Length: 395
Image (cartoon, rainbow, N blue to C red; front, top):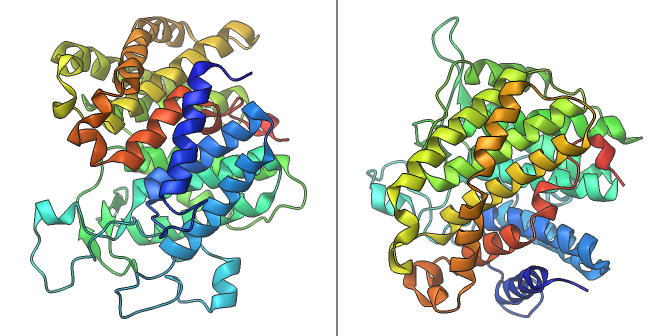
């Protein structure tokens, strides 16, 4: 029998599926970040409830995303797959041209001046959204044993690296654009996201590790060059942030690195310690900020819920250490002990946004889909975080 949190997660995801045209005859509304979390949530609900319909919803959502965000907008003079492949070939390789964000406004044209306020509402491609989709596809392979989804993720990884990164002066690591045009031909925002190369590097290692546990999986693209280049990009960089979504991302990345270390896929223990240390600094700053004492009208739920999901990852790491014979360094143990003191913040965030009154605020309703899906992820994080972060989790 599902507990109360699981029941709420089920209700949130069922409403999301109907509202965005996944299970009802409504216009399809697809948004890549939200849909990546939603795919993982449906996988988790299928595992938790034993109901295959949730796994079917995950697959249906993937198909909708690829046929919607993998193709040009209805108001674009171009049509078809972003990759330029034929309809048939594009369906076989739906991620080779990347995936649109799903913003309401069309992208900024080559001759249009930059407007920061408008740019947030304009379409294009975000690297950090693409890596979330890679993770979602990989989770399907890990849950089902079907290599096709991991192959799509690796094809997307190769495309994204080639489009978003660019060489600098000789001997220096590559740099990365934050936002690209829909066809990946030009940067829309040339600055580099603080954690984008980090998330990319860890995600690519995860993708490459998955086929090792699958028979008959495709060998290419193996992402060896991309991983080497991204590893060079993250050397010596500063990861500390006081943004709750960013802190949560660091904790999730640390959780994934810990899983890769435990399965012998990575040997970079320094990176794990660095990420935990950066997250701890950020958490201390955020806890002192008083943001969680503000009224709902002054808070962004999805950013806070990103932190809550990250704190779930901390608890899973702590549980793994307690049950695993493989020892962790004394530094990691001390860091996790310090981080565990902040898990009440996770419960505080969840409790606040579970209150119906708080979900009437405009900051909730204006971002309803992403807020509800990420609340569902926090209430039932198994699909996104996974019960095992290595190839042994394959079924």
